[in-house]
Image (cartoon, rainbow, N blue to C red; front, side, top):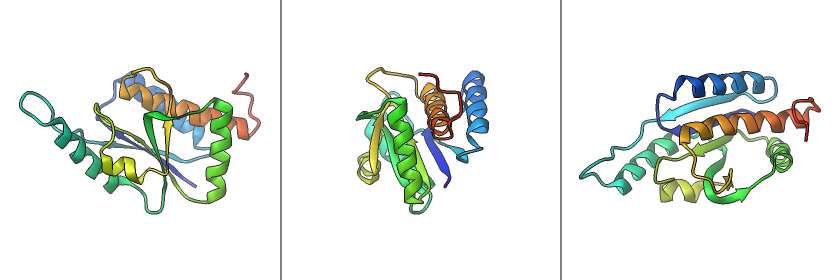
Amino acid sequence: MKARLIATGERAPSWVAQGFAEYQKRLSHWLPFELVEIEPGLRGKGRDARRATEDEGKRVIAALPKNAYVVALDVPGRQLSSEQLAQRLEHWRGQGRDLAFLIGGPEGHSPEVSALADEKWSIGPLTLPHMLVRLLVAEQLYRAAAMLANHPYHRA
């Protein structure tokens, strides 16, 4: 099983890129994890944000691996503890499908992307910079995989 993080936005700050790369490397022992950056839709004065979100959605859908189990990061999604995420990861492994985690743009996911998600995961009600969410997802997936491998990283 492989996992892909499909994230709207490009050129993460170096500290985010370095942190993400560190957890990606650690996670590779248990779950190959790839980042795919999606070009954001055009926004600004006189531009339609809905159209930008739809354009992003088309690019996200094109980046999905075939037959992947799709988990959209979404504020109204299901909130999980680290232990519950580890249980979900074990469940996803049992399905034998690749995973795709989706981070939308400033207005969230397009309706088409939301409709094809197999489930929605919320990392909480806080408003966070989307670049930081990349790092949080990588760390939490590493923590979940470490828990399943009885690695001492998680000390709750």
